[in-house]
Structures are given as structure tokens and as C-alpha cells.
Length: 354
Image 1 (cartoon, one colour):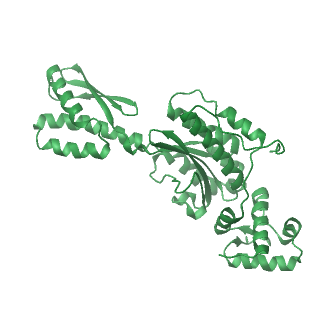
Image 2 (cartoon, rainbow, N blue to C red):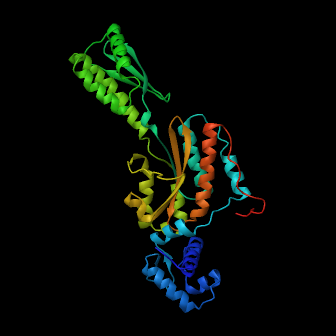
């Protein structure tokens, strides 16, 4: 889509003003902001043309225009300026990144809460790249003649255990033999490989032994699936209510419910290219997000794992500022997981405002 310089200037002002005010933008505002040496009538004609292109929309109750999802996308791709973080912003984020927590999931949860406080939007954080997660070790511990405990450790050093009760008796020697068989056949296996190995074992083990193997391996497989699909850690969902777009129950309710249950969905956000991605309105997969936008950034955890941290809000978001903040914070998380360092500031002494 090709726009004239005048149309680009008008669209730029409409988006910027609508982000600030949440009110439709009229020709008088554009004339005063865009510094165009043309009449209001000419601006109105250009706005009508932008509306015809699908970049602007006109609410029924107003003579002004608001950006459409396509208008925001054109703005992000072609008109958006890079936001330089202020000294106060970098100072706040550097202080927030001084996380002294050892468990990765706790760090990710805390990171989401921090971003929510900084941006005043709901945030989400998740990890990806756990496809290589596998079982490192099985320990089988006899409790009594009818029960035993299985302890499973993954290659990421996550440990879970479960008590199994049996209809038949089992001896210490039988349990040791079972442990040896399972450790020799099922360690180092991913979820898919566990299932394949289980099918192979079925042709060789006795019915009673195979039943016990299935119990243990099924528990391990479920554990891997839960870790691989640990879902999304969300924070600050109530922040939606501070924005005009979500002040009615009809608009806020479905999105708040979706975010509350997001950890149980398979429709997870994905960054396709680069380290920052913006999904606007209908570009989102989940139907509950079709009238909202997502800004997210990627960070490295190590061991072939990555994380994503992002915010959810109305399409009327300051994409440049959010992208800059998330990019800086994600870089800080990467350095923290990798070298324990904070990112270099990209602010300057002249930019001290909020």
C-alpha cells in the first residue's frame, strides 16, 4: 500500500493523538499537529481516503477518526519512531532486574509482575524451546508390599514423585529389577521417544512387568508434557480496567477470563522474526484477543531454551515505548541468565522525562 507524504503525516498524527487521548481525532487537531499547509477541508478529504483504504475508521457518534487494525500495522511497519528510554526508565528496570531468585520459573513470574508495574498493562511470560527435555533418572522406592514411590528427575534437574498402590504384592528385588530395566530403556528419552520405547518393550515384557512399566513411564511422560506446556505466567490482569476500552464488563470480562486461564491454552504467542514482535487485533490467533494487541520480546535462558515476555492491551497502545521497554528488559534477562550482567543503557542525559 502506497501513501503520499501528506497521508503518512495525517495517519501518524491520528495514531499518536488517539494513543494519548482515546478520543477520535478531527481535522482541526491534525492541522495543528501535522504542520500541513493545507485547509481543514483538504485534511478531511485525505482522512476520507485513508478510511477508504481501511487505515482509519469513523465511530458513528463522532466526526473524528480512529486508527483501524490495518492503520496500526502500517504505522508500526512504516511510521513508528524508535523510542529512547529515559534515564529513569533504565534505572527502574535495572533495579528490577536485580533478582536474587534461583528457580527459573520464579524469576519468570517475578519478571512479569515487574513489567506489569512498569507498563500498567497485563503481562505474560513463558518459556519455549523445551523440546529436548528428557528423563535423566528414575528411582523406585519400596514403601510396603503393595506400594512404592517413583522419583523422576529430568535433564533440567526438575524432580517429581508419585506414590503407586498395587493390587498385587511386589518385593524389593522385583522393584530393583524394574528400576534397572526402566533406567536402561527410558532415560535420555523425550516425550515422543518414551512412547516409542514403550511400544517396543510391549513385545518383550511379561504382562505384569509391562503394566508396572506403563504406570511409571506414563507418569514420566505426563511430567514432561506439563513442563513442556507449562503455559503462560500472567500478572496485572486488573490493569485492564484502567483503560477506557475495558471499562465495561462486556469488553473487559471475556479478555480478563481468557488471561486468567491462559496457562491452560495451547494458543501461545510466538515470535516469528527478530527479538520483538507486535500483534495487532485480528493478527492474534485467539478470538478473545481480536480487539486487543500484544507487544512481546524474546530473551535467552540457555540450554536451548528461550523465554518470551509481553504485554496485552488495547490496540491504542504506545507501541514504540512498549517495544523499547520490553526489548531492554528482555536483554537484561538474557544477560542475567547468561552472565549475570545488566544491559547497556541506550538513554542519554538529555532525555530525562517520562
